Image (tube, rainbow, N blue to C red):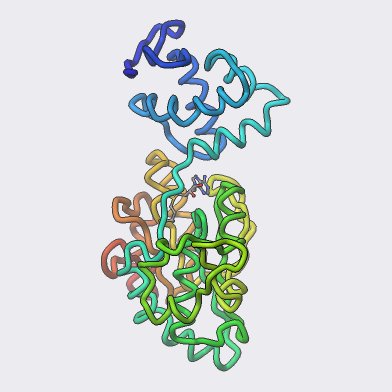
Length: 297
Ligand SMILES: C[S@@+](CC[C@H](N)C(=O)[O-])C[C@H]1O[C@@H](n2cnc3c(N)ncnc32)[C@H](O)[C@@H]1O
C-alpha cells in the first residue's frame, strides 16, 4: 500500500489497499476532524487515516471511503463520527511520562499548597488531555507522596479528554501490571493492588481515585471551569493542532493559572502567541505566570 497525494479528487490517494481512499475523501475527513477536535491532518497523514479507519469500514461492511464519508457527514452519522474521532486521536500515554514535570510539581509547586491544604486551603490541578488516566493519576500519586490523606482535604484533580472511551478507562483505574513500572516503587506498593476480577491487572487505590474527577471536554470548545488551577498539565495534545489553535489554547489557559502555579507542556511543544509574553520558563517545558512588575514590563 502506498500513499500518494493526487490533486484529482476522484482518483485513488491510497493505492493497492483493501479500500479506495480518494483525495476528496481525505479532504472531507480532514475537514471533519479539524472542525470537531481542532486536529490538523496534513496530506502525509493519509496512510494513518487509511489504516485507522479501514477497520471501521470493515465493521460497517462499507465498500470504500466515499461511502464512509457520506455516513459520517450525514445527520444520522453522529455516533460513527464519534468513532472516527476516537480512531484518529492518538492516546499514547504512560505513568510518570516526562518525570521532570512530576518532580517540579512535587518540589516547586506542592509544598506550600500542602501546608495550606492541611489548614483547609484549596488545591486544584488540571490534566487537560488526560487520555486513559495515567497522567492525572501520576499527579494524584505525587500529591499523595506528600499528603497521604489528601482525600480528607480540599484537593481535586480535574482530568479531561475529548475521547469518552479514554475517560471510561481512566474512571475504571485498572491497568496492566507492566504499565505501573514507571511509578516510584514506594508509591506503586502503597497505592495499587491486584484487581480481583482481572488477573494481570492492577487497580489504583480509592484514595487516589477519589482525588481525580474525569470529564469529557473538547479543548476547542467551551471550558465550563471556574476558578484557577495551581498546575495545568497540557501535554502532547497541542502538537496535533495548527499554529492558531495552539496559540488560542495557551491564551485561554493563562487566565486559569494561579499566579503561583505552573503550566507543563509536552516535550515537542512550545507556548506560542500572546501567552508567550505572560509566562516565563521555569525548567524543561515548564512555565510560570509572570506576576507584578515582571508582567508589566
Ligand atoms: C497523546 S495523548 C496525551 C496524553 C497525556 N497528556 C500525555 O502526555 O501522556 C493526546 C490526548 O489528547 C486528546 N485530544 C485530542 N484532541 C483533543 C481535543 N480537541 N480536546 C481534548 N482532548 C483532545 C486525545 O483524545 C488523547 O487522549
